[in-house]
Image 1 (cartoon, rainbow, N blue to C red):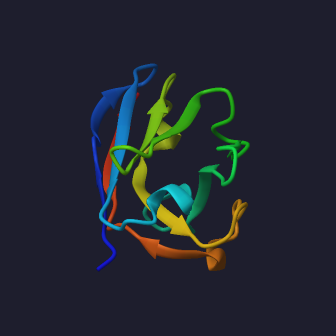
Image 2: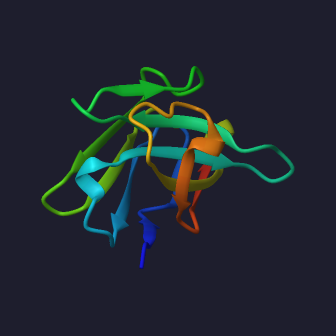
Image 3: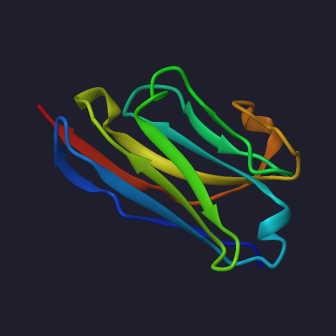
Length: 124
């Protein structure tokens, strides 16, 4: 079965850093483009970042560009999101997702599997 499990969320002060991880349980992880999304209470799901296939090209939403870095470790079937210079508006539940498309970008319908999320709270 396919399973994605996020971890690493928590409470941090503005300007601080957190590193999120996503553990994937399927064998085709290395062939999947992976993405991060987030959703704050009362707001729509927002695109954060994607690492595509082939070549591991990366893309970021405008609100996080220059502050967040997405990476993957295919040997460990894990996806990571390094978040620096955090702002209160970054507060949200962060979701890991997998796609059958090489470059799904911010297009939610192109992602096939989703984790249950991890909470990130940034205090001012």
